[in-house]
Image (cartoon, rainbow, N blue to C red):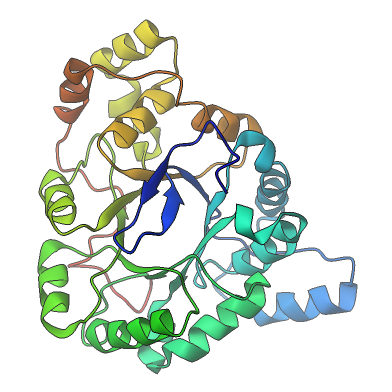
Length: 308
């Protein structure tokens, strides 16, 4: 795995090494196969009245996955709730050696309500066309289900279905409640985190409890308050880097693993090219001060779990 020299690695609490940055596939819908009948069956499995189909996006993601290795990208984050993305990821990544990849997928809210984690993980393994998952995450702290399902996640971890297990969108009070009933502490907590929403208290809690902090929406969707920030522009100009590269470097130096999302191969290349410079302590503090506790995604304490 370490043959990718440009990427730094972090070590989880159980000793598993993980790349310090990764690519998130996000939601996908249509997946074209050479086997048209098999592809049609897969498509029908994912049909719902609410879904719209974005063929251009799916082709873009497939293109990125096909060229990921050339971009020094080996960590891939997906979820069973992301439509067809597990199947796309499994199909494309067959071209790589499995030991060179770090694959993350997640237990969805719908799967949580079934209280059968082993069945859920086996379905994900089949779609991903692999024998194990590197990191299996609980997607949301769904009220009245997350404790019982975490206990089952501990079992699939002990049985070797996943090399590591963790959670997403857990606040401190969720983690404290989980601690009362668990035998295994989550190795990762993946949450929304960016300069406008830095979650410093949660980050500190996770560091103190040896829980690796992982960020989705790491560049804040390039919100106008980020794009137009003069301090951020000044820092980017000084290092001859883009705003996104500076923000991702800020994550790295704060001990956070950012999960980037893009449909353009050039952007993925830029996102990975952040290990040839370091921000000063003053730069870090300047970006820290951008925080206004502005969420751009769902609040775990207010979200309607039946819709996410």
